[in-house]
Length: 492
Image (cartoon, rainbow, N blue to C red; front, side, top):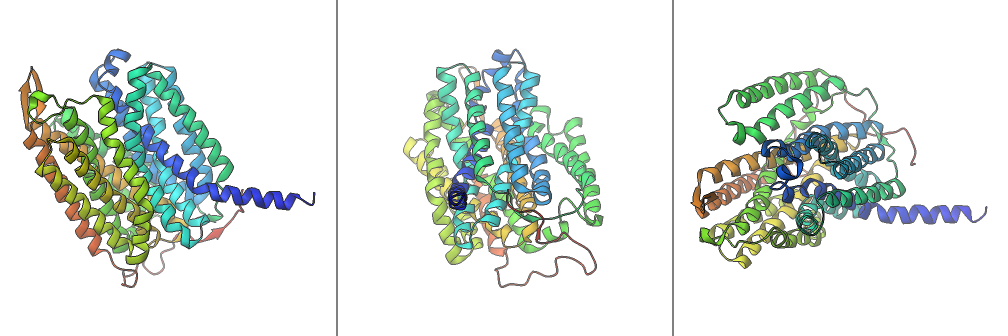
């Protein structure tokens, strides 16, 4: 018995050291899970006996579920325990992967992919856990790494999936993500302690339902507009529905004593501008992955394409993930030395510079990889700065929900980017061997659009108040708000 305290202390210390890598593994796994289905999309209609439109829902379902659940689970984490909700999100992701591995029924696959969308909340929950558990000198680099896992996992997921699809049955890909998910869940259960910081109160069920309906209408219209027609009745109806529902939701949130999203806090420049920058950075970043993969796979007859295979394409994108992994601590040091808003501005500027390289030359592989690497470098700086800006601007008890909203803004930016790039490329095509292929000017226009958005993000970053600048009142006098720090429970 006399040795028990020493062993216990040793175990706690080891778990503490493993917290950052385990949470980062969960973030990477989340991004991998979202990405691995992409190489399968051309073949899934044949493999599942369904239409291409039905197969597209394997991406749409994950996007919608992630967008809806990220702020909801973030708020639940602030109220009921971040570790508890993190384990639930990882568990749903693992169950979804297992269901995908067990079936070829498109209906079950779509439902399972929706379950996987819950993993989108892993990153904001993990960032909040790191803020609660780590000393200040370690928080910056850990948060930067956690934020960068989105890009790291996306870069790793495509070549991994391509290799599995090429050399094994397609179900093996989901068995692999199921095994990785189970490992991540077990490691998180073992190493991550429950944060004592809570925001007690009653969960805003009506706020969650209103946000869910509004976001589903908005993102469904954005993601399906190209296929259904931007002027079609369903798309216009969804946009109108989103506007009405979200307007009512905002009014309800402003009246609620304990809202799902504190809109008064979010309206201050310290929080609102990072959210705007997240929306713009998500748009600018996503074009890099979307366009690069299509461009290098274009046929040689196009005059610019390289005709690369899916596996070779994945290997071209692999350096982007390695760049984000290596540079995330560098971006944290820049934020420590000069401020996170400077890091965000530098990152946004680098993204724009990378697209300038892509516009100048997109015919040679080494230039394509160089331009994509510059964009990834900028993305690392921008994505690592965003959660730091949010953490410095919100109360401790609202970090998960506030970061959930920030991640949601990135998701909306990526969705809008996907629709915008598709619209541009559809209007700039040429016929090669009976197939419509995007032209090089079409790709260059997409690069110019993403680069311009990155410059707007840079301007938004510069406009963010410094730590010493006043930001005005965040809440009218007499309006109650969530408790900032409440230690209800000890570590588990």
